[in-house]
Amino acid sequence: MNFSKILTNWYSDNNRDLPWRKTKNPYYIWLSEIILQQTQVKQGLPYYESFVKKYPTVFALANASEEEVLKLWQGLGYYSRARNLHATAKHIAFNLNGKFPDNYKGLLQLKGVGDYTASAIASIAFNKVTAVVDGNVYRVLARYFGIATPINSTEGIKEFKTLASSLISENEPATYNQAIMEFGAIQCKPKNPDCDTCPLKESCVALQKRLTTTLPIKLKKIKVSKKYFNFLVFIDKKGQTLFEKRTEKGIWRNLYQFPLIESKKSLDADEFHYLDINDTKLSTMKFDYTLYNEKDIVHKLSHQHLYTKFWIIEVSELPEEAVSTDKISKYPTSVLISDFIKTFNFKV
Image (tube, rainbow, N blue to C red; front, side, top):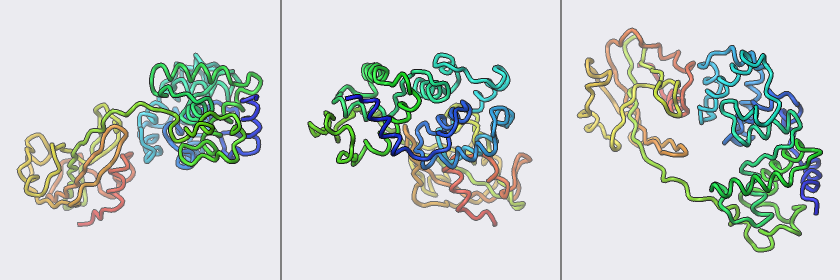
């Protein structure tokens, strides 16, 4: 059985009509791959279209401000991708005269580009024989060949990369790579794979041994930690608030938020009153406060869950750095802050 030929034939009949598949332009392919890292096609497609419309060339993206890029990215999460996207665009535009490296090793040197992304761009844009290995590929190979090695182990990463490299079509590397990823996305799905119509069903080890719900195997994730956030939503008589840029390292770096106090547990109104505020904006102000949400808003990230409360703090006057509440929606923020802004009525 010619594994790669079966997949490419399947792909010719079943592939989805997606804009980045209609081009060999490395800028568009790179842009789509960065957006689709840890993001499903359905969610990523409108973002791709927005970026292409606003920044049709790598030079246009390079000349944008980071704040503009982060704002357009808002809602996709994993904001380091957006920061790396912007940094790489500037490097390509200003240091490489707008030309992307045309090989795997060169692409791998770009910020935010790892093994998978470098392989995808090299094969799709430049027809290089470099095999991609993403979540879809892991699943297809683990099931078809009956591989029980954990896909997120050092051994597993090497084993699956070697296997993928041995299977890729040397004549049609771009088509094959897209075919195996598409096959995993819509045929050999994580749950309820369509085994009845699968062109590989006669020789699939997982199907024969009833292991489709077991494979692939993944080592258990690190325990998710809990954090308790208290956002201070100031409002003065001029309709202004405090909105700060988060400069410390972390996933929300360079995004804007209301002043934040972390606590060791979820606080009620009485406990908030006795909070140590010596190093906050509250320390020199007379204020009245109310709790916006009695129940914590739980914002789930890959490595931690944030139990969040918003405290509405009314003051007569705010410092010069205060901004009008009708302008804060223009700043790049996290989904957590953006959702609050959309639902809260700032008129006092």
